[in-house]
Image 1 (tube, rainbow, N blue to C red):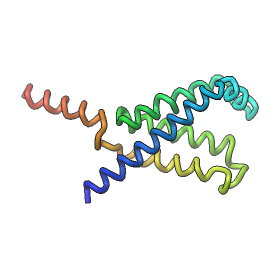
Image 2 (cartoon, one colour; image 1 turned 30 degrees about the horizontal axis):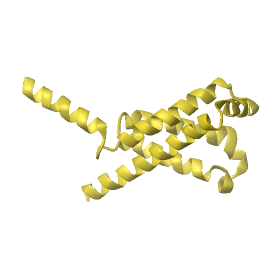
Image 3 (cartoon, rainbow, N blue to C red; image 1 turned 135 degrees about the horizontal axis):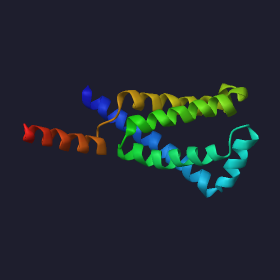
Length: 136
């Protein structure tokens, strides 16, 4: 059963990371200025668009490779909460925030549980444990 959980969590982590990476890439590819103006139009500081885009782009890659997944996923969850409450809530669930809430749930799951299978964090953790046992 543990192996099934590890594999399913890996799939969740990779899908979450790819999704955010592509959303961040889109913000830059479409012209970050458009995103800045949109943030300002809904009453948010335009500079926040840069932070969100970088967290999505870089954070998405980090989640895919499993480096700092818990911390990055927590940041992605905060972004999703922000998106839901500033831009999507008034649109309702269907064709509104249903996708955002799914990403929020995925991000919270990884933030709480992590995902060690095929993760750089596991390699780093293994080397630290090996160094500690050799020093003892």
